[in-house]
Length: 245
Image 1 (cartoon, rainbow, N blue to C red):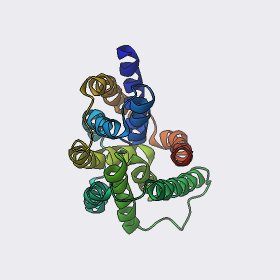
Image 2 (cartoon, helix red, strand yellow):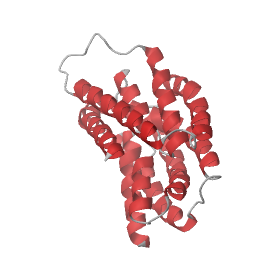
Image 3 (cartoon, rainbow, N blue to C red):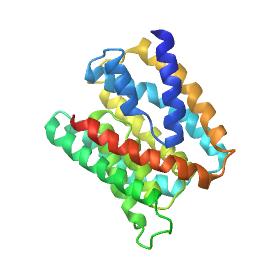
């Protein structure tokens, strides 16, 4: 079991850091489905596990020069308070209402990302820069209410706003550090962290998160975007479906 958790952590860390997420939904799936933790404990352990890998991956992204702090800071303006609000009201909002709302939003974002991926010519109707605030707020609510990483809407927003995949991944990882810290503080008071399981996943994820940005830096950003952007769109759609089944 220990080796399996380390291996799964490595895969999640390597894959998610290249996609600009924190891996919350993946970690939750492992913690609940394989480690058999309760949802509240899995949420706290997921954020605890993801945070160190995010820090390592963000530093590696920073060294590549792809990080766009102006977009990241705009995201944080709405994402940080949304995380706090989401954490405070998480026990009040009906689970069914929240589940369907997030599923619909993720599905729409996924479809938009896929459409953008397969357009031959750039569209003249790109989203306005201020819409990044909306994606930041949604990300914060996902972290605060459900203990997810919130990387999905952040990445979708950054891609739809014109960043290429390496830039969006780097900027997303930077913003998710702050959200994960706040989410961890709140969720750790609601569910116990499973330290042994979390540490095993963390060891693997740290290795994956440290290695992958350096590998991506050796490839053409346009080719990386062409390959990974539709993957991101498909993942968003699958996440939306998983939310409601």
